[in-house]
Image 1 (cartoon, rainbow, N blue to C red):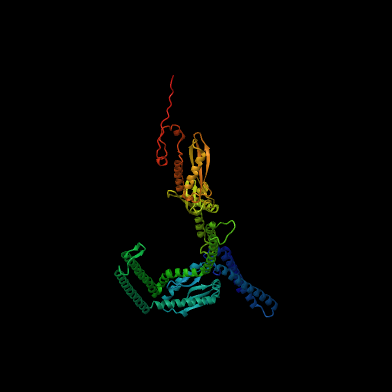
Image 2: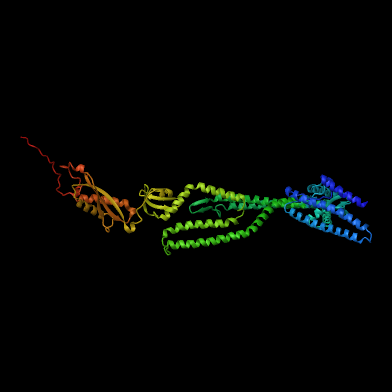
Amino acid sequence: MKGIHYILTCLFLLGISTHGVAQNDSLVNVLDSVKTSATASFSKELEALEKQRIIDSVQKELLQQQIESLRETDGSQRTALEAELKALQEKETRRISEKKEKIAALKKSATGYPVIGFFDDTLFEIHNKLGSFSAKERAEAVSRRIQKLPENISFAPDSLKVILSENTVDIVYNETIITSVSENDALWNDTTPQALAESYKSVIGTAVEAYRSEINILSIAKKIGLALLVLLVIGLLIKYVSQLFRWSASKIKEQENKRIKGITFKNYTFFDAQRQVNALLAVNKVLKWFTILLAIYIALPILFGIFPWTQNFADTLFGYVFNPVKKILLSFWNYLPNLITIIVIVIVFRYVLKAIHFLKSEIEKENLKIPGFYSDWATPTYQLVRIIVIAFMIVVIFPYLPGSDSPIFKGVSVFLGFLFTFGSAGSLSNIIAGLVLTYMRLFKIGDRVKIGDVFGDVIEKSTLVTRVRTIKNEIISIPNSTVMNSHTINYSSDAPEKGLIIHSTVTIGYDVPWKDMHEALIEAASRTEYVLQDPPPFVLQTSLDDFYVSYQINAYIREPNKQASIYSNLHQNIQDVCNENSIEILSPHYRAARDGNMTTIPSKYLPENYQAPSFSVKTKKED
């Protein structure tokens, strides 16, 4: 009859499994995970293994009964049955090993549900469902049952029993099952069901005893007294802290215009004595309240920690401070290798820049000469190379920065790059133009130039603009892109070696011999300050017009920045020399009616007995 009974049981269980009647399948234990997609897959596999275990256990029971019912003479049949039983045992071993592997994989993503004790503390966690109860429902039910245990006056830890049932190990108090431990529970905790049940029993008994000791009237009275003592200490601490800061405030006021005289830098006063005292009093007040609040914050966890049912508040309050600090310290410790790497990279690149700066200085001083590379290129080239080296250093350091691989960090980097690219489009063209101008060597600081319509001396060459001071002391800033698009005349580049030719044109009538005019103009140029005698000045006759000849005086100078005064002196000397040589600088149209008019030559150049000529009048006598 027993054999028939087990066969019917096996068929019944299989039928229930087929129709999905899970509430009667108390032998099927599967995992319940927070990750529903992963849990569903693992649960189906574990459920299949559990079904196979049930079938194998029934078959093992049948084989065991058959072996016991055989006679001693049926040796061959006994051997066959024992071999079949051994195969089932080996299959059971493989099944458990496979289940362990699947649970180990599930541990990486799944979390358990806590069984809560008397002081909101976690006694243990449940990860698996059992029968129709999910892991969460099991944890809540076990928590309720445990919290009812202290209501029984006769409760003792020894009254909890561990009883082995058909498929689970139960922890029982009187006739109440506190919790059941399945094979899956044991595998999740890497132990056996019996050992796990004994561990749970010990934890539950200890928790109940601790709760009873904490709610003892004498114990509560002691804790209340200790809490009052803590409140008294905190009150005294706040009182004396307030007195201390009141004393420090009075001392600060006493030192006004004594030790506290204000803060000055050269002729500027940042704080006078009164403002400095007010600032120190404000700092003193902030420190006072910070100290008081810190003392209260430290006292509250101590106060809450006295009573077991408020210990969670204490842990939470301490956690608000210590958890961030702990996280910061751990993050810093974990980041320390990257920080050391960044420091090493910075040091290496710093010495690379020093080496490049040394080369720049040597080229600038012309101690090191590179064919085709001018000394005035050294500084701008160094600045350009420096930017490239620093940019390369940033690229090397970037992977070691905290959060460099996060999407937010990358998004901010792209956004800043976008802003820089489109926000500096005009500036970028000026920067590139500035670099081109540097290597074109159109001019240098101090050169007299003419850029477009601007005439003056270069006083600044920056990455973006060129600044010119005109002869009227006007400062004109010209964008480098504009300089690139304009024609530039440099009066100073060859003046020190070859000299700069200044020139001025005078128009004189045909009645003055050209040789006399040449001599006069050359004499005027020779008298002019800063005009070179070697090479000597020379005259060019640039045109023969209808009424006059255009004479151009040319002279060499080496001071192009003094052109205005040189031209002025030259023109004065031309007037003087022409007057000395009786050469009038007049319009030929005016000279056509000169009879009888006083000459325009200044009197100091005329003879003492000079008299204006009379008008020449001719008459015709008629017959």
